Length: 101
Image (cartoon, rainbow, N blue to C red; front, side):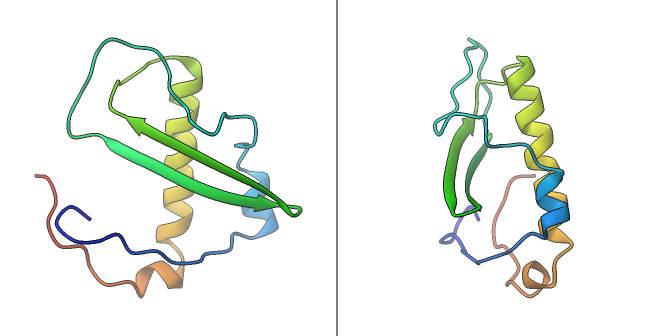
C-alpha cells in the first residue's frame, strides 16, 4: 500500500503450514550488516503466536544483505506470502492503490 493506509487482517495458518515455517530463531529487529542499499525495498513485520508464545519480527530489507540469515528470511517471507495470497481472507481484501512499476 503505497498511497493509502495499511490494511490489517487476522489470518490463521494451519499447523501443517506453521511446521514449514521456522521463524522463531530470528531476533525481533533483524538488521543484517551490509553497505549496499536499494530503494524501493520491502518492509516486513510479522507477529506470530505459537503455543501461546508471541513472537514479532520487523525487517526493513533496504540493505540487500546476502548473508545466509538474510537469504533464508527473504525465502521464508516469500513462502509466507505465497500461503497468505492463496487464502480466501486475502482474496477478499480490497485491491491496492498505487505502487512501483
